[in-house]
Length: 207
Image 1 (cartoon, helix red, strand yellow):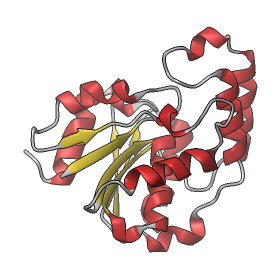
Image 2: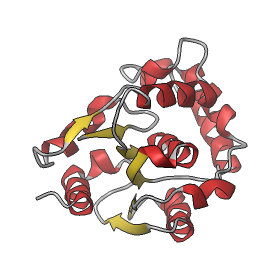
Image 3: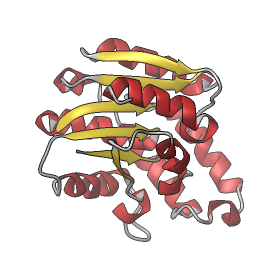
């Protein structure tokens, strides 16, 4: 059984390396590069999600998906659209009703950041701006009742921006439980990879 790990914005697939190194050998991790899901100049959420949906169609068994931030949004979106194809979800720092003000603030910050800050992650500055603009009106609230698999929702204790939404989401999904990682901010796979791995193993029942 393969387990799909989806990274967040500002990360790449290697951001999962330390977390995966702490996981059981029985967990076969697959970490796609989200930058492979769009072409240059076409970095909008719809394109990335369509490509991710096509990627998932290549697996013959129900999926276990773990996503952080943007990865969590993609995972949740897929579970709403194809609940029969998802066996479990782990959503770290998720959003289900996009915070428009926060996205606008992020866009302003992106515009003032040098292009060099975006090296080695597969996204350019313009990609980030285009992507966040395309997500501003997204709201999955009406589809949450379609998610019928077990869900673990995690958030770093210091991730003050996303924690409130994560708690709310855990109360709206019928089979969800919520947990925090005390040593972590937003990037739980980077800030506390062992703590995240322990939570994943407990959820999956792997020793």
